[in-house]
Amino acid sequence: MTVKVTTTVNGRQVSGDVEPNTLLVEFVRENLGLTGTHVGCDTSQCGACTVHMDGKPIKSCTILAVQAEGHQVVTIEGIGAPGALHPMQAAFQENHGLQCGYCTPGMIMAGIGIVERNKGKTLSEETIRAELEGNICRCTGYHNIVKSIAAAARDM
Image (cartoon, rainbow, N blue to C red; front, side):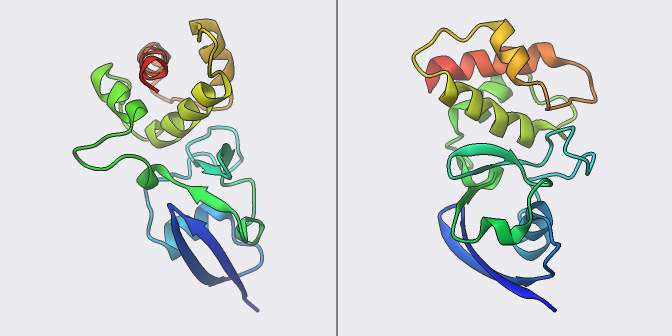
């Protein structure tokens, strides 16, 4: 038995029939073909699947697609555009925060959330590192990721 999910993804209303236990990350990748959101650990520890729901970063492997019914979901494909990158994407490019790239979409979406939560405050390296807990880079090179988020915070 399938259920119909209707939600808004990247500003576009979408619908799909899914099994009730379909994860949001599976719906986004398999039903919508938005493969920028990655499945890293499948246990909600790594954050590669981070998307925004109603403006807040969430790990899309921790909720069911049916829980997104009626909500606003934004994936990495929904921010910026070729030739007009989001400030966080541009900062990752300029500060070499991309590394192998697997965790990058989740890091960028988490980074945007960090900056939004700390608007009007000085965003220290310690704060960025603490708030990135839950997003794992298997390249283990957080320095440029932290540097990228700090740079984007100045432009957002």
